[in-house]
Length: 186
Image 1 (cartoon, rainbow, N blue to C red):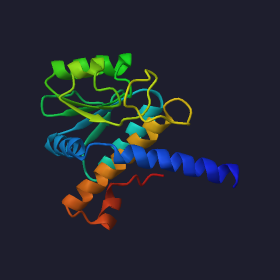
Image 2 (image 1 turned 90 degrees about the horizontal axis):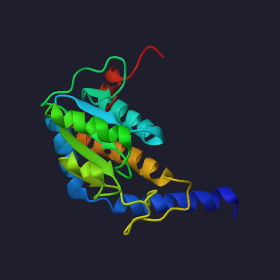
Image 3 (image 1 turned 45 degrees about the vertical axis):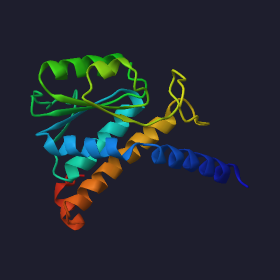
Image 4 (image 1 turned 90 degrees about the vertical axis):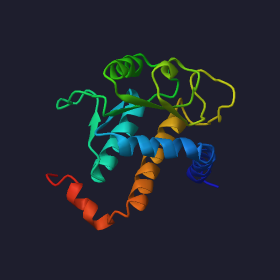
């Protein structure tokens, strides 16, 4: 077996096991929070931020008003908005500070992470656990052969695309018509 085939099988097995371990009721609650919000803000750092940016873009394709914290056109967050925080450990300084500020402004906060006992729990209204190995090496984490927190970032991105598909199906959105929301200056 080639090195690629073995690595591909190993990685997809990890992803499959992780996605199967995510609580469906937590994801249903996340979908409900997204639907209830006027705007959905996203915050994370590093590769997690890249996954969140892709999720924000995908939800924007569905007609949802999304904002990535820090973008130059970022509006004020209000009590009608939702902040989605991506942080495996739930201890990253910038997302913690942003979550605290969002709560001060009355926004709902959803934390997508691995550590349910993190400092983020002080600010989150809802938690979606992706139960993968973090830098904290806590109990009940799915171990990974991949570098650092790759498995978390991969599953976060897939979770976002699955949430989008749930919304498409529940709202019976016409897939070809979604192209009207796709960038057209490229």
